[in-house]
Image (cartoon, rainbow, N blue to C red; front, side, top):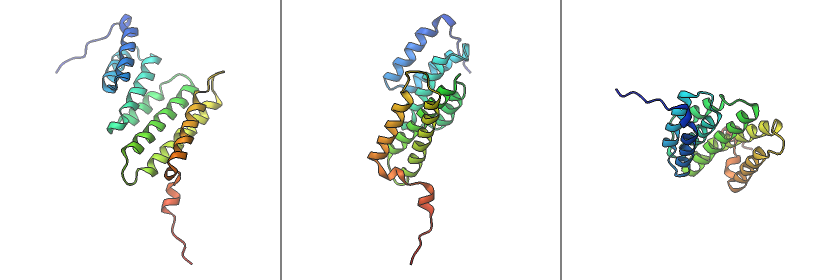
Length: 167
């Protein structure tokens, strides 16, 4: 079997720029690979962790397998409560959008649940946000607009499974 080659510490800034470029080219797997190489030599590199989280969420529309749980694992490694809450919201919101975009029967219920989870995370982030940082508020509003455009997402599991009361 082949062994992975080790990235040098001095190459990290250029590698991060390349990972971002691959994300912009819609090649999340390439970005993920680069971030994993960076984290192999610098496990606490915040920029690599954030880029990896975003690259994993970029893969959600493709049916990303274990990408949700992997993204959540990396969210837990972020250093501040704000970042953990904010990026947990990003993961949940992007999962909701991927489910919604995929369409088909039964997608609205889990998509709505993921969207509500995102909004709870954005509320937690907003409560501890840095001064002059309204990113969580912007994401919250985007979620509200998604609910407005897709009212079927408002159905909760309790409403769906409640017994019908006939007179």
